[in-house]
Length: 349
Image (cartoon, rainbow, N blue to C red):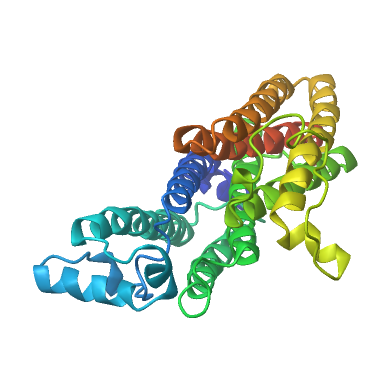
């Protein structure tokens, strides 16, 4: 006869949970891609209201489209840049913002509904319920952060706050990292029911922190349109850092608000982050994981895509590929950090 603990282990489904989480992670990568397109096509302010439930239904009649368009005409972005836009032009930018919001709702349901089912059926292994609930709560907060970001561009500004954009992106990628890490823990639990969750080691923390800083300044670069400041590489014009750039006070604010300084930081911090990721890759390889090789390949590709984005004048296909690869690089880095942090299974007497 099975003991109570063994009976509970027989009911849990770590493999099914891991597969579910990896699918949700794939949806988040798609969300990052659509979000990048939304930003690059200047579509993010086309929907001027936040309707979490009723907003799932797009305008269906001519009157509804005209009402949406009228709302857009009232914001500063329209007055500054898009006067004379036709309804067809508005529908084009509306599509990307609507797709972005719709995908966010799909991800929410794809996470919440299976989580409820697994919980009711008692399929969640001990110790993972709180973690999955925390991810769900962070996902709900992400929706609110998205609207907080959009709201920053509806009254005074002609675009969204680049700081809020960075918070929105970093929250999405924190969700992605947490989901992938938990999925990897559950996959290990499937292979060995007594497998202990992996821990974040010093090299994992350092490499991921450096990568998150780089992604943050990438978001600042996108939000400030700083990628258009200089298209040459490695020099910015004729020098490493251009002379005569107007600076703001206090000095530290240039690192956040000055497009030229932001682009400069994003250019060169890439190599600091790359060094941390190489360190992580070596540690993962020593731990017997091939994830390190994937990290090296993706970080090399990411640097090349960053240079190509500048050189192409922020051509949309290249820029979106740069952002998508950043999400894939994060997944690879999390996988490598997880491999380094694996612990021996907890054996019971």
